[in-house]
Amino acid sequence: MNTDIYQQLLTETEDLLYRVRIYDRDMVHTDEIIEMDQTHEMISSLRWMGESEMFRTKAIEKLIRMRHRLMTMMEDLLFTA
Image (tube, rainbow, N blue to C red):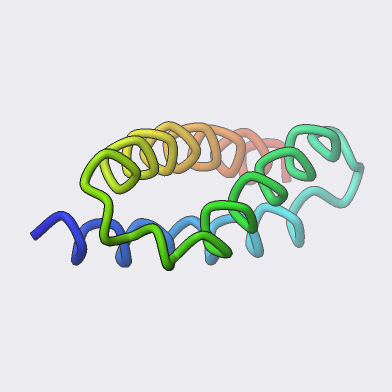
């Protein structure tokens, strides 16, 4: 079950990062986007650790926080567009 959630969050976060990068034309959130992109790449590159329940739980928590922040950023960017 956690594996499915982990994979879904990983995919959704990647998609949101892509979309936020496109909509951030004025580069208001560039530093934050770069930091989240690096975090996402690190989590994604450690998929082999997906067998570890502790890693998956921590990664899921981090991806959920990232997704919430990206959604907030997207709302701000679309509201000002």
